[in-house]
Image (cartoon, rainbow, N blue to C red; front, side):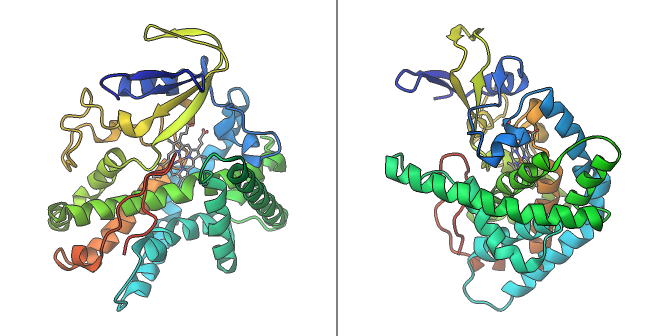
Length: 368
Ligand code: HEM
């Protein structure tokens, strides 16, 4: 597809698909022609979240929420992420059969983000469910399926909204130092207005955008090591390569395969006329395997020289806000597993399910 039709028009749906690295980069970096306001309905809380906004509102909100993901805040959370990781590893110990996704890669990002949002561990299960529903896509496109899916999604968003409103009220009274809601509530106090109207959708977005994706990153990495044990052995003899492995995993099996924009005004794009209002789907996974940018893209190469140039986190003004957190969690998770499982024991511990390919995300449902 990338070779033959890097820019493909679908007549039936009147939309475009973009597959090459260069074109995808152009789309994500050109906010003046490609809008993120892609028609999420007003009543859905994600419609008020930054991922579906354009400047100037996006710029204002991003400048405030950025401070919840600074290197200083990440550093402050590092010891706790180590602890949570070790607790999860300890729970797996001695078990003969484990589903690695259910027991480790799934809970890790949920617990971390919940704690960062200041949420108690007692609500964790409900939390994972909400996140799962909000990020889901309908099983098929039949009217009945879409109706059921929409209802479930709206219900999950409403429940989560109520839940967050209570936490926001509490944090206004008793703010903490490094939890995200306290940081945002304090931003309010110093005059940079970010009303509750935007805080709740932002928290929803963190769950929807951050959990499944990070689970996929960790799960896809382990899947790759089990498939190619020599990578695992290299990491064991040189743990400094773990960060390379995380970047290569993001490129090689990108957790978010496709995102979309809407054409804001007519433009000529690589010889084609794109019309205002048309949807443009851009395929990050395809861009990350573009041989014009990555030599031997089908090979998982720990020593790739342009590791961080992949587009797994998107680009331009919507570049993933949680990228530092996702990287930190994946680095800690893999380093801790390396310490725990020897090179020979580890890949044999898990039997693999094939990777199911859903619409947007790319990851494992289970790994046991
Ligand atoms: C945006 C991928 C983890 C929060 C994005 C975008 C991508 C992405 C591709 C750009 C969307 C667009 O251009 O429309 C990923 C991947 C992750 C990950 C692959 C894990 C491996 C996280 C985490 C969080 C997070 C852990 C936070 C807890 C966000 C937010 C945005 C975003 C808030 C919107 C930024 C904006 O609109 O300015 N992510 N993400 N992500 N991500 Fe992530």
